[in-house]
Structures are given as structure tokens and as C-alpha cells.
Image (cartoon, rainbow, N blue to C red; front, side, top):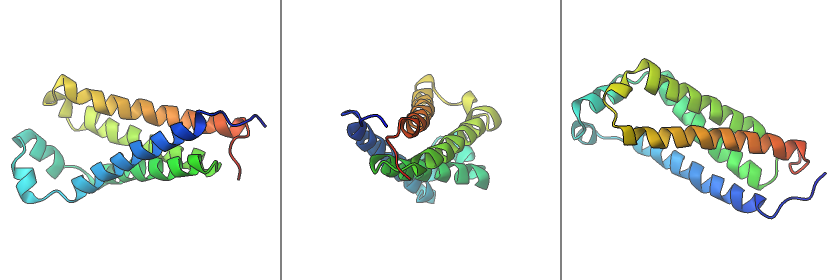
Length: 141
């Protein structure tokens, strides 16, 4: 078992903050009022109105899996790997819908691709970090 590096806890805290922001985004989407939806451009309205339930479930898996995985990582628990895996799967499913199935690429501006790409990269990094931490003995059962 290797000694826990000094950067580990700050990274875990940053992951918690990142994933809590995701939970807040999910909560805001679920609490979207008809007035909020009506204020959006028509294509955005159609995107949200036609979103299948499985995409919403993938979004929930992504953000709640990431949040639980981050807390588990901070507490140095091996279950972090499982939750980050669930989160990564949720992100991939959600992004597949957004960028392949929904046609959102036709109306999204280039700048609106940055955050989804960052989300995918962070999900991959956190999953890989948790696996590496488990292999190095930084996580307990």
C-alpha cells in the first residue's frame, strides 16, 4: 500500500463540489416551470419536451453517481469505483442522446459543446483516478 499523496483529499473535495453542481443542474432541470421553458428558443423547448425518460434517468445516474462516488473517494472507500463507473455510463448515455440521437447539434452553438466535453473528460478522469487509487491501496472496503 502506497502512502496517500497530499493532493488526494483536495482533488476529492474538488470532485465533490463539481458533482454537487451537477446535482444542482439536475434539480433545476427537474424543477423547470412552463414559464421557464416558454422563455427558451423553440428548438430548446422541443429538446426538453421530447426528452425520453431514459435520458433523464441517465442524467440522474451521472450526477448522483458522481456525487456519491466523490464522497466515497474523499472517505477513501472502494465503492467510489462503482459509483464513478455508474456516473461515467450515465454521462455517455446522456451525451449519446444529446449529440447523436436528438439532433441538438443542429441548434447548439459551438460554445455550448465545451461544458459537455468537460463533463465527459472529468467523468473519465474520476473513474480512472478511483481505479488507480484502489490498485494503489488508497481505498479501503
